[in-house]
Image (cartoon, rainbow, N blue to C red):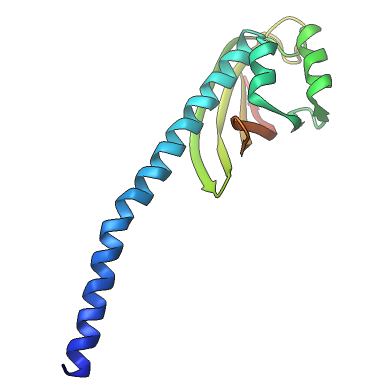
Length: 155
């Protein structure tokens, strides 16, 4: 067999192998992305309902937040804010714009629209924020390990 035919056959074989493997990789990415998008909505619902038991199951024990007010807070502080009504919303909406998966890390970015109430800053106003949530696959599943949110508009 000539060198040219051998090289051509190698290329064709490589393409065939890639084409047979690629759908499985895309499916895995798609399945994980779908799971993260669902977790994003469940976490938001738990915040909206002040369901601290659910939040504790979803957040890593080392969860840390750079909140919209420029504070870096941990789980005990967040739970205190919830108990004091400083994290309380009459409406919440989260629009996931992008999910990037890197090994056992999922980076989720998007926009949130919330209407704070009670003791929450900007109560009664519509607050639009850009956010980044970081999820890590740990024993037992995905856990949110970090979050950053920035207010971009208050109406």
